[in-house]
Image 1: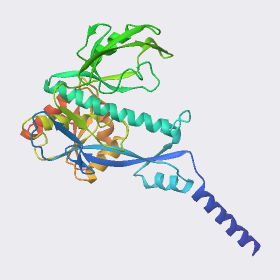
Image 2 (image 1 turned 180 degrees about the vertical axis):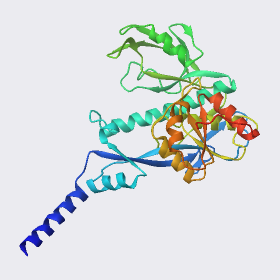
Image 3 (image 1 turned 90 degrees about the horizontal axis):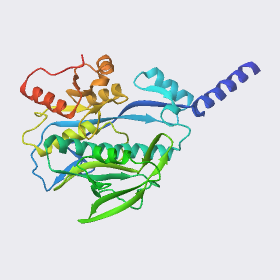
Image 4 (image 1 turned 30 degrees about the horizontal axis):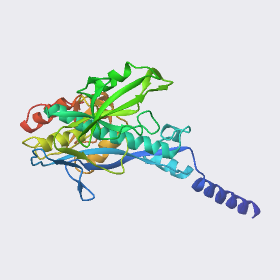
Length: 335
């Protein structure tokens, strides 16, 4: 009898431990998906003012990966056995040398950068007159307190600039401790800031502390979606901007989803978690999924049945593939 009682107490203790003991793992799975042509909490995700705007149809859904933290031994085993999530070390998502707040701030900054880069890529693709602006300022950097997001950059060290790349190239010629004159326009008034560049351990060039980007010179394009982190929505944001600013409808009425980073030149980059993103897209009704070329092999191996995969390398490439879909021509598949 005592043996039975002891065994029962041990089983109970193990059950309590298994249900409550935290383990250093997180579970990745399908995250929220949003139509970049639609609304989020009553507000257009992509809105345009002061530029010709055209009707759209169908869907251009961006996709995400969810991260479930605070796992117990039992929940981690459950997710592992279920097979619809991936259990990985927590360190891979939340590095121990950074606080959770710092990680969230970095993810938010990446997302904001993807929004700015998407606008820049779309403006470049459409040939809209543009200007270089400060997309963001690194807190505590040499530029902090001197430049602000939205400042239009006219010249760097006396050299006029027409692209974000030119800003970076001109700053890269200076060394830590050197003063660089940034000519900028704020509220219609041209001003100058004398910025003393700082040193960084990872490079010999001086550090300014801004993220230059490009936006339309006339009118405004606003991309707004709260509560999302990371850079992987860039491609879908850029497509939504192009769709709103051009006649015709990119989707041809189809439900299209996708993923991929984008830079101001329109280059589409690889992302993580594509199996989960495709699973969510398929579950909500997507017919076609736009896949960065570098993710094609993984996507082809894990795609849900019935979801057509389209390989893309640039924004221009993605637009050409969507044209082919609308016209019933063959597309470049990952398969």
